[in-house]
Image 1 (cartoon, one colour):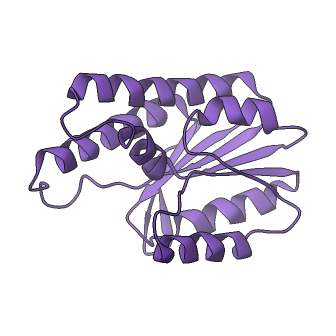
Image 2 (tube, rainbow, N blue to C red):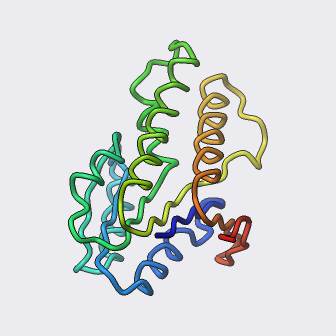
Image 3 (cartoon, rainbow, N blue to C red):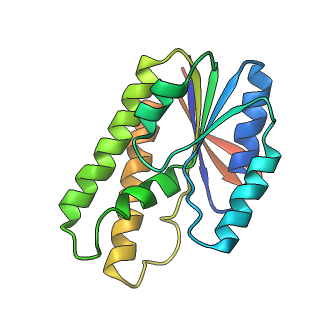
Length: 181
């Protein structure tokens, strides 16, 4: 089976490409949504994403322990889309207060990503994972934002190391960063 990581900036076409790749697979799809509606605007975004998905896809909405939820709900899905790691890391991060020991937060994020990687290796499905690249801009002005940026960067590195292919999207155009040999 194949695993793909799609990364890039906001609105770069990652989710659209993930859906196109899943449709091309021709099999059943499990869509894993990690967003949580914290306000009305985010609720509208979630609703728009729901409407853009084919109705025959199975969708689960989970905020943490994604790997365990996939194992429990995969059924006969041949392709799993996880959209997205950026919000998953934010969800783990949000379990701590702003004064938490950074090493504890890092340990929790690493455990979440390792659980997901274990799930990928244990299932007989293709995985398409969406994440954001947030390390290309200015250095965040506060400690909490810098820690989040760093932890998402680490999560992305862990995933990129384990998946078969990585694509960086710019203006809807995927650039191959890592291809399966």
